[in-house]
Length: 371
Ligand SMILES: C[S@@+](CC[C@H](N)C(=O)[O-])C[C@H]1O[C@@H](n2cnc3c(N)ncnc32)[C@H](O)[C@@H]1O
Image (cartoon, rainbow, N blue to C red):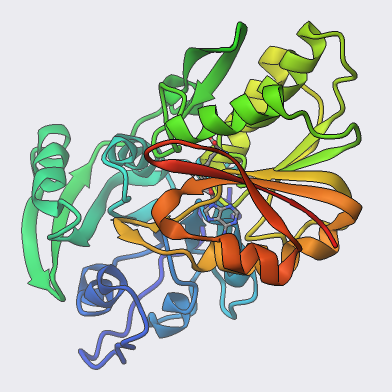
């Protein structure tokens, strides 16, 4: 009992908390509103671990939840009494024990309800929930959603291009299950049918992405050599599951396909998709290629090119600069990307000679054998 309900933290709010410009606007907005934090605090959707060091107090058994594997790792390195949580499954004993729960608005609208449900599961009876997000990210609309669920909710601050909403005297949810948010859809491609798991915020939920489909076509038309495969940025695990099912249906050896992704929902869903379709391979959370130890006969990817709403090829650039060391000699990199991104020169520089094996109006599939 004593362990699950530590004494409340008292914040020494002097009004002079240092606000670092390197933090996202939503985090800076929280630092402008620390007077709203009472007791034990849970932060949901933290995007920058150094926020913790800027908050007053010692963390006081607070919770810092992220769905990004890289942020999770950086949270673990932060000093203070904050407990990191990766994703949407809290530990037993955490429910109903936070006097303040802060929700940072997620990028995907569908994820707002999931974060709200988790917040209400974690909130102490009579506690408060703060919702913070950028005006461009849709906080006004999310604030209305928030008020529909919690009638005491109101906008209390407008700061750093963000709005801060506060709901007080919250009645917590006794029950919370991530399964309530999980969906299934079927994907049929080249006579192979898969059941694919989805969660709010995951890439291409409910349908097969056109770029992924073009990559799958090449796997049927220009097969990769046999051997264990890595799917970098695996999302819901469509590529690995499809490749194994297609090979099974075509009397070929279905080698395991390991999958890595930075996002909690992707890892959770990829494991479920693999299980539902009898696919084999390890699915691991990883920021870039960080957790990859071994070398592969082939590495496949439909890599990310967005951070939120902005085009950002830095993750893929870094992946391309490191991928050669994870390919066996003669191993193959096969990657699909929007044609305008033009990865050809980067692949040639870091991996080897590159050819385009399929393209359409929007996408290109590159194939490169490690030199
Ligand atoms: C274009 S989606 C492709 C998903 C899946 N392969 C498919 O085709 O359906 C890109 C994926 O990259 C993941 N991602 C973004 N940044 C990453 C990083 N730093 N390391 C690993 N994966 C990342 C995203 O979570 C997302 O699932």
